[in-house]
View 1 (cartoon, rainbow, N blue to C red):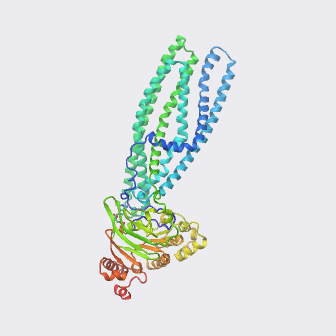
View 2: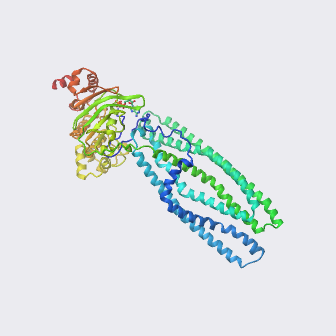
View 3: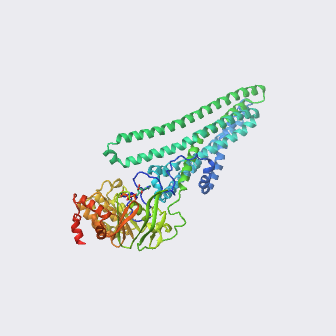
Length: 637
Ligand SMILES: Nc1ncnc2c1ncn2[C@@H]1O[C@H](COP(=O)(O)OP(=O)(O)OP(=O)(O)O)[C@@H](O)[C@H]1O
C-alpha cells in the first residue's frame, strides 16, 4: 500500500517526494518517459534557446569578439613578418628593418598572450556561471512538475538532466565558442593574405578544402544521433545505478549483487559501444584532415617551387605562404573537435529545453484561487479518475470529510485508497466530478496555498541524510526553538534523542538508516506537528512495531489528529474503530460507509475485512487496547 509517494512532507510547498515504486505509465497529460527516442537536435530547433541564453550576455559576447579579433590578428604578425625577414633583411641586406620586425613580433606576441588570458578568464567563467544558472533553473522547474511526471521518469534520468545535460553549454558560451569563432576568424584572415600572395594556388587549395568540408558535414550528420544516444544511455546507466545503490538492502537480502553487476556491466558495455562508434567517426575525420593537409602541402610545394623558379614568387613569399596555409588549415582541422563539442552542447540543450517545456503542476491558468487558512472541509463529488486513458481507477466517488473529523479508508490492495489520497493531495486532478476544499474546486486552487496546509505522515518515512533537527525543521524551517522542542516532546522524539551523545545534531544517515522504524515514525510525526496542517494524511504502517513504540507513536498521532481533518489509510484496529467515518473502497467504488458500529452490524465487506484482520492481529503482540475481542468491542458500542 501507500503507493502515492513515500515522502513524509509535513506541509510546506513541496510537491511530494519521489516514490520508490517501479514507474508506471504516467497520467495522460504528462509526457511519457523522456528517454524515449526523439528526433535529432538541429540548430534551428535549439536556436531560440541559444538566443535566450546569449541575450543577457550580449555585452560580454561583443567585447569578447572584439578582443578575439585583436588576438587572432596579432597571432598572424609572426608568419606575416617572415616574408620581410627573408626577402628584405636576409636577401637584400636591409638590416635597418630587423629591429622593427623583431619589435613588431614581440609586441604582437605579448598582445596575443594578454588577450588570450582575458578571453579565457571572461568566457570560461561566464560559461561556468551559465551552467550553474541553468542547473538551478532546471532543478526548480523539475521540482514544480506534477507527480505523474516523476512516475514516468527515473530519478537517475532526472539527475542527469539537471547535472550533466546543461554542461554542454560551456562549449557554446565558453571556450568552445572562442575556439570556433577564433579559428574561423584566423582562417578568414589567412585566406585573404594567401589570395594576396598567390591567387591561383589559393583557389586550388580552397577547392580541396571545400571537398573536405563536405565530407566533414556528412560525418557530423552521422555522429550527432550517436551523441544524443550517449546522453540517453548515460542517463539510463546512472538511473539504474542510483536505484540499485538505494536498494542495497533488498539486493543483498536476495543475494542479487551478481545479477546487478551483470546489469551494470551490460549497460556500461552499451555505453562503451557508443563511445567507440563516435571515436571511429572521429578518427576517420582526423585521418581525412591529415590527408587534406598532405594533399594541400604537396600541391603548394609543386606550384610554389615552380613559381619561385619562374620569378613570380619570392622565396620569402613562398615561406610566408606555407606558414599562412598552416594558419588557415589548422583551425579548420580544429573545428572537427570543436564541432563535436558544439554538437554535444546542442544535444544537451535540446534535452534541457524539452524538460523546461514540461508544464508545471501549478502552471495551469485555472489555478488562480488563493486559499486563506482553511477550515478543512473536504468533499468528493462524483469523482472519476484514470491514470491511463480507458482504464478507470475510481468511479463516482462522493463523500464529505467535515473539519476536524477522521476518515478511514479501508479496502483490499489495489482498490484505489492511495489514489483517493493522491487526489486529496492534488498530485492528480479528477477526470470527472470535483474535489472541493471549503467549497473551492481543488483543480482551480493555487497549489502553494493549499499544500502549505497539508501534512503527510507516511509509513515509509522520508528522511534526508542530515541531522535530526534538520529533518524535523524541514516542514517549517522558520519555527522557533520553543515550537521545535514542543513538537519533539509531543512526538516523544526527545526521549530517544537525549540518549544520543550528539542530541539533535545526530546525523540520521541516508533515508534515516541509523534510526529504528519507530524512531523514524516519531520524527516524521514531530515534523507534521511543527507544520501544523489543517488537513492531515496518515498512511499507517502495516508492520507492527513493538507495543512500546506503538504506544509512543499512538500518543503523538492522537495529538496530531486533534482538530484537523484527517484521512487515514488505516490498518490499526484502534484507528478504524475511532474514525468518524469509514469508507470501504473496492475496485474504485465506495461500497460501504459509516462508523465502525454501523459497518460492523452490517455484516458486509467491512465485517469480512475486519474479521480477517482481527484474526491476524490476535496472533500478534499487540499494543494496549488492540487485542480486544470482537464481542467486547461490539458490547462496548
Ligand atoms: N501511477 C499509476 N499509474 C497507473 N496506474 C496506477 C498508478 N498508481 C496506481 N495505479 C493503479 O490504480 C489502482 C489503484 O491503486 P491504489 O494505489 O490507489 O490502490 P490501493 O488501494 O492504495 O492499494 P494498496 O493498499 O495495495 O496500496 C491499481 O490498479 C493500480 O495498479
